[in-house]
Image 1: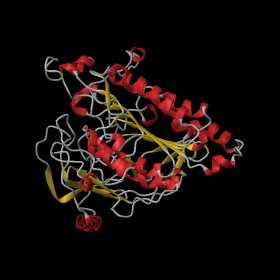
Image 2: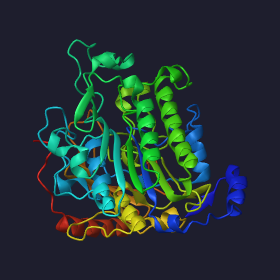
Image 3: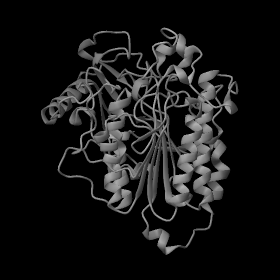
Image 4: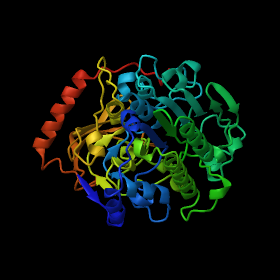
Length: 462
């Protein structure tokens, strides 16, 4: 489903009559792809998704020139499994990128396995330059780093920014109230070399922007895939001096507003290099807001719960797609889509055959990006190896529910809780009793899914 926001009408009109660029070489060259991946950003944290005090003019413009996807999901509720799913197009249990520890730590011995096929590996067969800039979190040992999974270039951190905490830092959450980089002995890497430790986290967003722009300019004459995975707004929160005290929302708002500037910087670089009309850019987040950190965490808006949970607030993400001349300007898609869909979609755009020797969980959503319908009709919500909930069309059934943090065991539900997300996106009103036929359909789908699910041993728990 597609609609247009009134404030974009003039822009849409102008785009409709913009002259077409005649360049046969450009027509033959596959499009560039840029994925900008925030960390722990909530569904309600952008002004174009309803936040009243965080200013995001660059993302607002991106939405005005492109498409807001209002029913778009990360494939998991925490960092590691969501990133593995994005790059492989496979649910985390299939490749063992989940477990009781939930994510990789500095003492973890596992990582994304070499036999997994990733987006950059596939796109390189068509001559793409590939870069991972930002947070990796799929194994820190040499055999698991981005260079082993199809990325020509890596600049960033091997895991999340709240790890390697220094023992002499303030106790408990006090270190997050007024965070300092020296409280965490986090490494910053270029390729396989540590170039700064502890990394100056105040400069992360700015440095990543600069690296992204440099990569774009250096590879403007060939197709490229840029995976720009920001560390922010994951706690501890850091921003440069330019954004200190800028937002009415406080430190969290400062951080998001600097991320917004970063997005604008990347889009400006594409415009300045005349690559805008041959580049698909998608902005989204790995999971929902970390609510346990109160004002240091974000907001899921009208959605329930946040990071770590399989309620909507944990996995539905604020998402924007931008590709001038291809993605309808000022449009809003209410079609179901996920980061799982990136791999088959990017393969289709690049003219690469998606892997056929393994089960993929994504769909080609090029039709959605042009304003059409989605092939995706269902969504499976996993927490580690537990299938917690399933969505089919507007209906979502919860077989197990558990808060993201602070609830030791999940609550089972028989019959499952049932919500109509078209009517009740906040998951407030259980309508299971009134819809036994819907539950019967979903249970049949679950039986089929479980029968074909071949789970791999956990790498996260090694």
